[in-house]
Image (tube, rainbow, N blue to C red; front, side):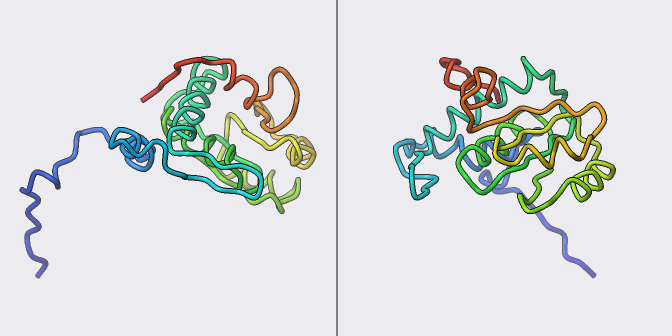
Length: 166
């Protein structure tokens, strides 16, 4: 008894492939809203343009350096902060599946999550890596952010100029 849903209006037409990160972020910058505040914390403010740049850089690192393949799962671990948001969007832009965890989860709980999701990569805030390492997830490649190491994803992202992945 359902009616026929007709989506004939131009604004209801979508391309055959759709990336939600582009819809959530890129379109704001394309519409000239790049300078608007997007992520605000006690210590920093990221505009839509800042978040776009960093999420594209994360996506590029995932594809080029970590060999992410579309459909691979990426475990995200950290508090709600700008780099976690950039990482989530970067995973989606690169075609991955973001498996976001709470920072309160401990090694046993992370191991259970990994047994269910089978992530090939993890992006983790450097302050929360101990329990992730304690989970001893076989074959998991981990990228850190927020630290001072040369290979920290936030450091790598700052080294990349003009990167973009769609």
